Image 1 (cartoon, rainbow, N blue to C red):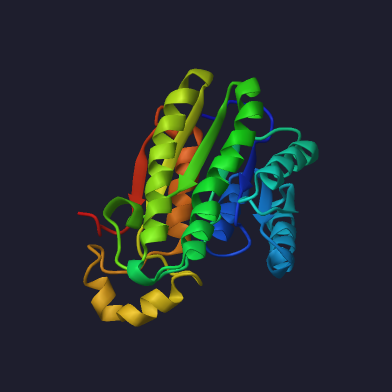
Image 2: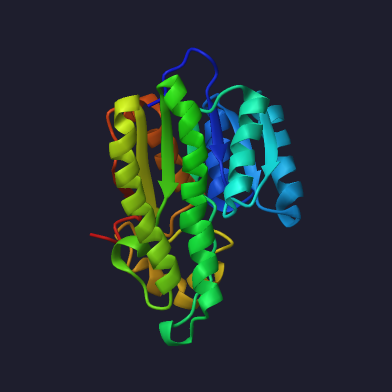
Length: 253
């Protein structure tokens, strides 16, 4: 739970595009200072452009920070840089993620390891370093991006499903540990969301065939997920922790 009279600060990992970008924009609209994390030079310009947009369009402080969250020390340096730039950290959103799909019998060990490293270990790394300033403040909110695949599994995504199921377990364990310090930890599990990462999946499934599996009859948008994340990170969700909120249009019903 956020408890501050100063302007709150949110760190969003993997924020240069897609869901992460939408989350960063929504926080800026709510008056947060926003730390826009990106993983490498290929995404550096997009991250800088987003930070400039947040400052120019919404009048908030924003800055881009490069770090591969799968690396423990880089995650540590990321949190330290955010604290140096903004002076505090109120919200951490672990959004950074990758997919390397393939059938179990053909999946390479490297493809399994790399997905777990970014999606699961990356979230651990960032939480590990972010909780110290939050505990000192005795307030904070962490929102981890899981997936409905982590709840029900999906053929061809053993690595991704394992990483997103792990996020759920890690979220619940961290919520129990951090509740006494007034820090909430929740997860959001998106369903079929229109992003660059899911473009091939959505195209292969076919619009009609896909929407027939969704109760609300449409594919979700990054903004749908951003609304849920910002709700869980905000004061209206101050008594909610250790929960998994599916943003899936009814797929899991």
